[in-house]
Image: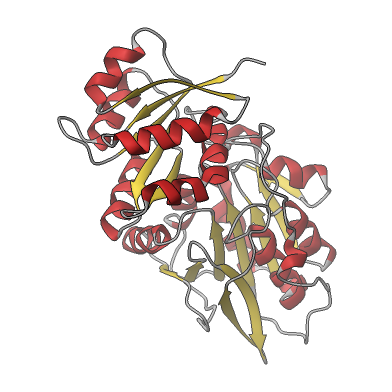
Length: 357
């Protein structure tokens, strides 16, 4: 199988060396070049164009966002942003995702070598996901990769499809990964203020979800916030699981709220869509609506099946509008999905569900 050619663009020689060493360990990947800034990178890429670019956003001569926009206009190429684990880094990364990047990984300011080594599996996964991205629509599928054992939602929460007591309040649960930032923006900005309460897992690094939620809150009629422990799930409110934490739906009487907890990686992710969907199956059952969206891998597929078994309505984003058709494809394969629809139809499906009896 042809290897995925990767170009590294970062002004830190240490970062370039460590990332090169990490990616070179995977037999499916080949680092074809490394450059300290975009101008040097463009010269090197004339000799061989990469399949994926791993790009820093803060560099001399030309910043990463300017380079990314130029790249997407002249020679669209999958880009993974490697950004500082800071509030500023998170804001810049969201700009990059809006400009066409398909993934983001965070790097610490201190202890950079050890930090990058600790997220080696995440970095490899991000590059492989990016290689599958369809930049014409921003959505993906899956390449095999060898990483640590993969936990299921059992590691966090046991499964029982018997909701505690009956209630008429409705909850919508959305799960997404690669391409999901753009897809979720398209869905949430299309919703009116009056809609069911929504809980969301989007695979993103710690701290980045705060900036993501704040951005969507400014753009949307609905209230969007990064979830905190005990937050109520209310009509017109969207709660996004914080990066690095799992989010569970709970209920007190007839009122829904969320728990934000630590725990092991599930399907190599924290937050995990499977963990959220299982908690929704356990807590809301037939009063819930689950939607699995663009992303690589299978996180959320089993959880969506559990939701359907508990009486929830279920949907998947269709292949034609996915950046990566991995998670929805696996959910369809498992029989978890009632029907697949285009991204543009998801907002109306949520509203129709909210209006149904």
